[in-house]
Image 1 (cartoon, one colour):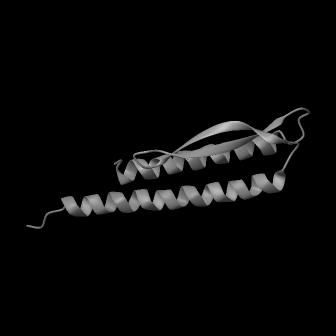
Image 2 (cartoon, rainbow, N blue to C red):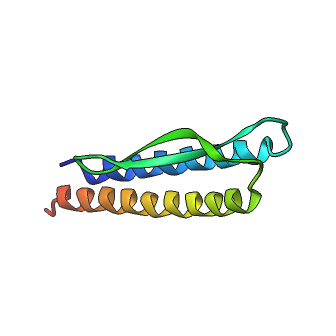
Image 3 (cartoon, rainbow, N blue to C red):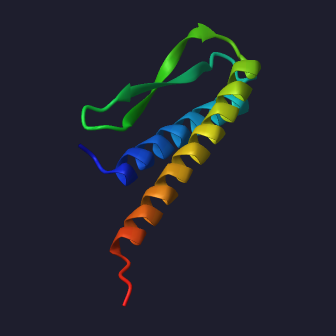
Length: 99
């Protein structure tokens, strides 16, 4: 099983990938022939998630979808960051010794 830190880090990386794809979609919304990007997240066997970017089957811009994806990515990043910080604090507390 993967550590809490590596699981949370994979979630933060997946959220960053989603944010990048959504930002790219917004930036290219008016570009002729542009295919939107979507992010597929796949659970990893040892814990965590991997993310890959694929071309969307939907043609044309979908700004409302991209806005929602950006908000979800932000919240997912912050949630995983909180898990990462808590895991780090717990590990530090276990290592602290009192004289």
